Amino acid sequence: MAKIDLNSDLGESFGPWKMGMDREVLAHVSSANVACGFHAGDPSVMVKTVKSARDAGVAVGAHPGYPDLVGFGRRNMACSPDEVYADCLVQIGSLLAVCRAAGVRLQHVKPHGALYNQAAKSEALAEAVAFAVKDAGEGLVLLGLANSLFEPAAAKAGIPFAAEAFADRSYQSDGSLTPRSQPGAVIHDPRLAAARVVQMATEGVVETADGKKIHFRPHSICLHGDNPEAVAMAAAVRAALEEAGVTVANLREVLSA
Image (tube, rainbow, N blue to C red):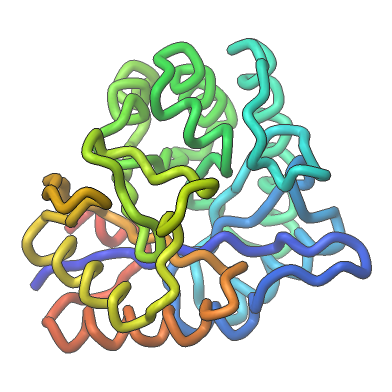
């Protein structure tokens, strides 16, 4: 029986400002990517989110981003590979400490936003992220865009890699995500998203924005927790996968299958 991980970017509230439907989304996913304070989140939110994931039986990953609170980490920055390495290492280390205090083993690292998109196409940045993951220790998995430069970077660093696809984002023919500035970049229909995810998990294909098909076999599917439809979409995707005979499991279980 096929297995796949469902992940969501959580812990992105900041002080009195609430972002996302974390507690509700946790009921439907198997892994949580917790913001580490650079693009979103703060120490109190990090502690609360890790404990909530633990109590829900959901695996925890670090979600490092560019130091860009105002832009929510979605603005491209001209950071050097050394800066990206250091920024990621510090963010992973912070969440590691939170996880240890909560009795949770940190499972993976997934870069956020512009850092994710830039590193997916830059060998130097992808390697900076991968070696930060390696040097943080504890056998962490690098979770990154399928068919991107994250995979060879992980191999070079000698760390496990998990390929990620997106339920609520459209794709370009080169396998990259459609920029959010373009129409149709975000999918809001839970039924459409669920059908696309089932096709990814069972057939290894997804239709691009221009009607072509690209091939990949994702280990994990991202469900963004900041969409208004986040909870309905998470529930629809999980139900559709289970109906198709696909088991939802956390990343370590998927990679060991």
